[in-house]
Image 1: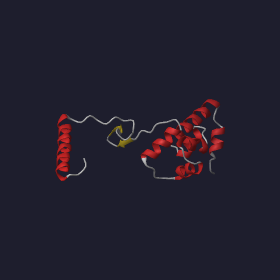
Image 2 (image 1 turned 180 degrees about the horizontal axis):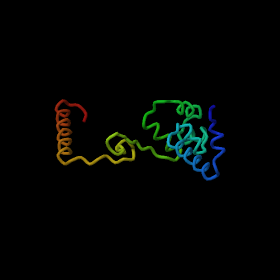
Image 3 (image 1 turned 90 degrees about the vertical axis):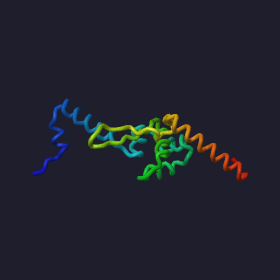
Image 4 (image 1 turned 180 degrees about the vertical axis):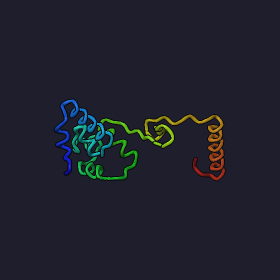
Length: 136
């Protein structure tokens, strides 16, 4: 005889049922599609489209895509009021938030040695361009 999950949950007391429902909501919230996220934020495709400056059907197509540029994902989530963080997970260490993938992340400071080398390369390029009579 098979067991129906609804029957099982129906036999739980109110406190147990609430715990199961809360845990289910937490698990569902941990992974969402862009469409699910938009709906959870109680936003329409038209409203997101207006914020992004695109059409409603473009938002619909965007939500169906499985491969997005980070910049597109970032703009879409920002239009919903959020921010995107990329986390790398490895089996042998704690998760790592990747930096410098966001427009908001300041570039890392370069060492003086590296900065000096970049300046020297730029100066060499300008000198060679000037000798050839090319615009700099």
